[in-house]
Image (cartoon, rainbow, N blue to C red; front, top):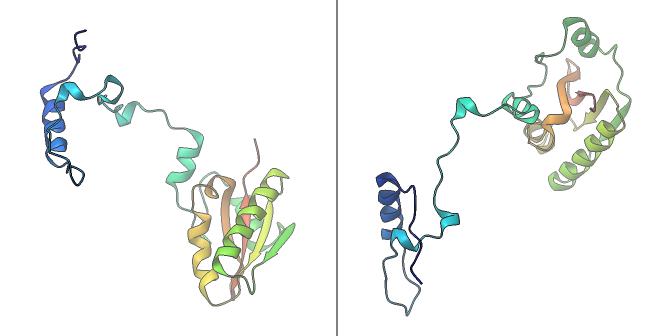
Length: 174
C-alpha cells in the first residue's frame, strides 16, 4: 500500500521540520535515523496559526489583558460607584482574615473565598493579610492570576494608613 502524500507542505514547513529533526537525539543504544517530512503524521502537520487581528476577543481575554492594581480605578466602573467603593460607603459583606496562614494555605483559602463570594453574588468583600510579610506582597499577584482575575473588578486598601487590608469589588455573576 503506498504511503499517502503530504498535501499543502510548503518549503518553510520542510525547512522547519529539517531544523527540528536535526536537533533530535537518539535514545541510548539506538542508531540515529533522520526522520523525513513524509514521516510526519497528517494530524501533526503544522497548520498556520490564525491571524491575531482576526481572532475574536472573548470576555475572559479582555479581563486578563488588564492588570488589577490596588487603588486604581478600573475601566467599566463609573466615578460615583468607584468613589462609594473607595471611601468605604460600599461595605464589605464578608471578610477573610489570613493572619497566621502559610502562603500556600492562604492562596487556597483566598481562591475558595472568592469563588464562593462570586457565586453568591456578593459585591464587596475584604481580605486581611496583615501589614507586613509575604501575604501582603503576594496578594496583588494572586488577584491577577487567570483563575481569580475574571471575578474581580477593582481593589482598594480599606484605609489609606492600613495597607494590610484590601477590599475587593467583585464582578456580577452572569
